[in-house]
Length: 508
Image 1 (tube, one colour):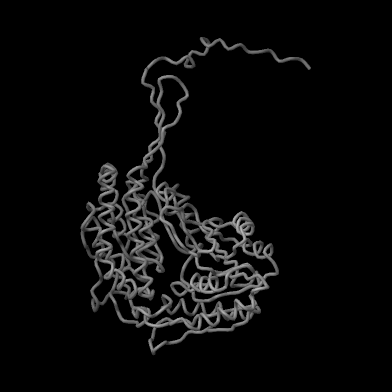
Image 2 (tube, rainbow, N blue to C red):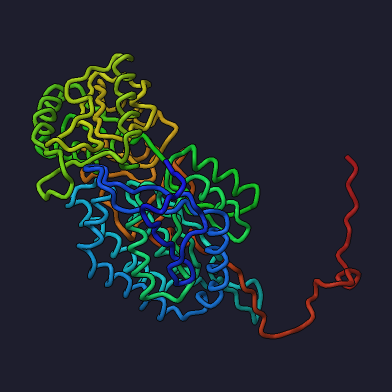
């Protein structure tokens, strides 16, 4: 929880207009390693004055940034990617320390961050608009795609730098300037990333502030913000959409989900079992697209569950900085309590706990660890199939056949992603056509592609990130109509010159 500063721990400065400045707020948050509880730093809960300064800086720099030639923007984005790779170890270590993410996952994540900037350096260089067939002689019609202006980028704790990069890179490529609100649980990696922006971008193009709910409220309400790009929970996304709607601001929202994973009877269990485990337990289950509902076709169910239990028991849980560790921590004590409560409620609804189910302290570490957990006999419609459990909990439901699996998988208010394992092309296509999901993975779960759009259907969001669609999320089209011969048009006033006869109505 935030608290008043007593100057025992200096508050980390924020990054506005290319400078490191102190926050005007006296409210601070201690940032601790969720595995060891070691104090990593102290960040401000930025106040209204800080938010205004950041938005003003972004607004003042936007027109100049928009007019930077595309080839120069591309060069700067590529340079950002290169500098991120140069500091990969430093960024990954800090990310592991403040997120509880295993070292291996953090290293991969920094590579994906760099790739996002490199991808949009290339896409934006050759994407500006289209030529349109004219409606008359000596006319030319074309579209150009212009930036919205100032983007507020708000990201969650689970992928604090990657999900920020998915907003910052295309927003910059499109000509916008940005105010980044780093997640309050772990802002330090984004503040370190600001050091990279500082060495490459003009002042004010990217600004980084810190804070929680009140900071976010000031940011989304600010009249100088033109677009809000947010990743996080559906309730918060709905709140942002309501505020944006009242001000007619644009939004790009990637929200929560309870994604299904369907394993059909023809699946190769040597592949499917570890694939499902990874798709659910990645980042200790704190992934928006992790497979929170697992549906098994009955003929393979018993063998799959036996193998899954054996496999999960081999996974190492502990200090995320240990390169041999597979699963790290949850983000906070509150997160552990919530997952524990959801598991308990699922059992009360009839689920059977066959592995894990409680918090623990591997190697005596005092942090926020929760055992990898397997629930079977989960009833479709119960809590694990309706609520997003943000923790390492595999919830298994057995279905009689493929049709029932597809029907249950699609029976949700959400639609972010869906995974399946099968070698049957007909079933693959039938599942793909009938399950509402922004991304549909067949035999290769959770693999992202910078060139393909990512986002949700239904309650899982509005808009897309990545791909050219992700670039278009940060720009709006303008139609240009050019007639290179200026002349009077025959359809102008006075209409009497047009002499269009009025036919008499026929009598029936």
